[in-house]
Length: 499
Image (tube, rainbow, N blue to C red):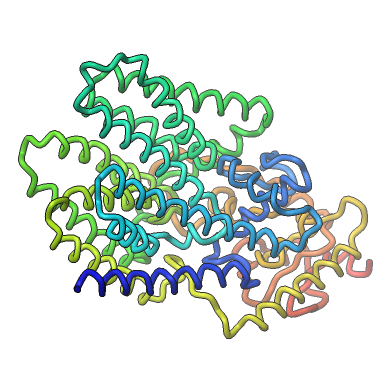
């Protein structure tokens, strides 16, 4: 009776979350959580320039830190002439599909590999839908990377469970066929986001503990060659790949940033910590020399350790713990096998987690649809589109503008002089967060300052709420506010006030 009630409540919570996600796809709100614009520009770069990676030290000063698979997936589904809102909608819709496939894989793995009851497996998986971060909702590559990692891990777990007791009788060559899809899926994760490379170390290490060195070495070599082939192909087709995806990624490591981020997301981390404590208690209760315990420890702990290490990077969030949380959930389900009363505790704790998670009001962790503001958001989008059309009509050939409103920038593209300023700002200018150790990459913005000094940029656009003086002292460059249009300030160089 209790379990039926818990099943029903989880289904209701999942349905509400799913409805919220669907509405967020339709909602014309740009930049959910303040994290989407750069990725939209990446899709626009592919559409207008035919490549994701360009010189970050020349206009439009774009650099994209991520691998390209997700960008191209979205670009294939959006036409160049479509309203930029289409990119938001397609990106969010894809991420919802990726998240649904991820929880389906979790349910199928628990049912078929852990021999759990079908309804129980699906209840746990549907409850896991609450675990997805705002980064999994917004136009970002995190959801595709997580899906690829979970797919690879499911195949990997299936291989271990099927061959663990026959490892001494099975020829090593028979494992190659099984390892190929594991390596392929892990490379797809790496092709989506660089931290997908973690699987290349964690999977062979786990296999070494479970089945010996020879199979672990074979899997490691296959994963290494697969990732290396991807890097070589991308390097040959995109000469500026290394500058963007590796030098651009090197923002430095910051203990102060970790402290700030931990303070900002303290409730998120507290809730994640609750899962971790429950998982540790379950492991401690196992027999000391339990072989399965060693396997789960070897597989799960590195995701936590490496996730926490990556959170030292400036601008990072607890989204780097996503795989650790999902795999911990799987291991928890395995730990309590044969103790059905504990499944009720697990389901109840997942419901409690959902309530606390969505009740905290932190838009960086999740996002609620703004149904009552739909008309306002639609009007805002229309105003931005009109302003962008007006400015483009005023520009001469090869002219572009600087805008400090991210929601407007997607409409100004490709007539945007400096599109990824948020990513470059902490590297190229003074930053509130210091880097006690590094090294870090600083891209030169000299030509930007030179063009401003010479008055080559016809317009600089900002809203009253934009902290433009924190990034550029326009008075120093003799730019003055000469007009207001659609709620924006238009700054022009003094010697070119009359165009």
